[in-house]
Image (cartoon, rainbow, N blue to C red; front, side, top):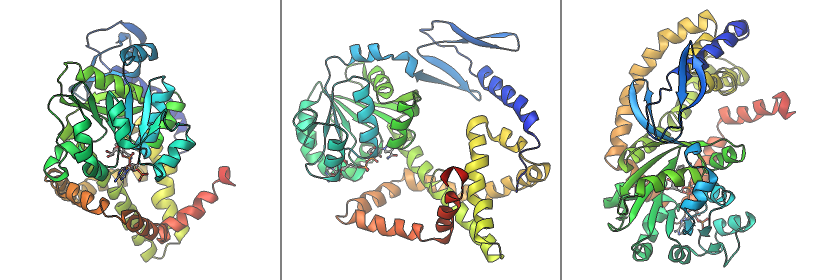
Length: 399
Ligand SMILES: NC(=O)c1ccc[n+]([C@@H]2O[C@H](COP(=O)([O-])OP(=O)(O)OC[C@H]3O[C@@H](n4cnc5c(N)ncnc54)[C@H](OP(=O)(O)O)[C@@H]3O)[C@@H](O)[C@H]2O)c1
């Protein structure tokens, strides 16, 4: 077990230091600034600005946009003549749609009648014939078409949807998947309309929860076609309207490659594989399920990973015992060396379209939901995740 208690006094002061360091690297050199001072670091005035900002991220300068750049009144004015037709009401449709509605924009939902999404949309207060329509009917009514159907469904519906994307409309995606892999998906956006992307870096459920808490998800944005000359600002504005806190620029290609890679790697597949490997070795060496689970998952998610999220990896190291720190410092390069070739293979597999092909083939099967459920059931039945269920129940707050 890692010892985190003894160093609390040190950490409290270091927490302040870390926060200050983060602020000091937030160097602003953008245009459209209103020069609003929020604080200072060690005597140096810290000037924060609103509007386009160039920030040095560890030495590489990038431009970012924030929610404060698009206050509600500005959004309402900017989209006053638009009907936003959001098609698909899965996780993203739900999160982005409700946030747009709460922001006061004119938004309608398009889903297939009497499907699971239709029922979910009804429960969330979308009204048939007023704000809830069949997919193609919504597309006809919208000036901005947000395509949040599943990636496989985007491909399937494209032949019907494409003729409805007439001049003057804007097409929006939350993933570069369909246009980037157009040879596989057959989704080739029209050249005479603006085509943009806003990709929240999290599940649609989180998009909604953070918005309701007054916080915001981080998102990337990209432009495929800029016919009007306003595609960039439209994407930035929509990013804020759907609930983003800050937005960074990317391309459709980079978005899809990084996204497919990330979710297969550290975000989901990689971390799941690592948990399983560590747990199994502990069990094979005679450790109890409680011990194996606590040393693999519970301590990670409840104690250490939140520290990384809040203050950074160096802070997490600093929060642990000298013994733990020494071991982790010795072993992380070994893990990196072993895993890097796997990540290299994974990146290649996303870039060359193999991951897209697999996803399209699997998710286009009529019985894909049943097949997916069977795989998820296998996970549910693994000892490690059954143990997790019991361990979570034992958390005092769950008693
Ligand atoms: N989920 C995430 O964390 C996340 C994050 C960032 C970006 N994205 C992107 O956001 C987009 C939407 O993803 P999602 O996860 O929200 O949704 P999803 O679960 O992948 O898709 C669900 C929606 O697609 C509809 N659909 C499926 N097959 C259809 C068909 N043949 N015809 C008409 N509608 C069909 C479903 O309707 P029914 O209920 O009627 O089946 C449902 O409304 C994708 O491009 C995804 O890559 C997702």
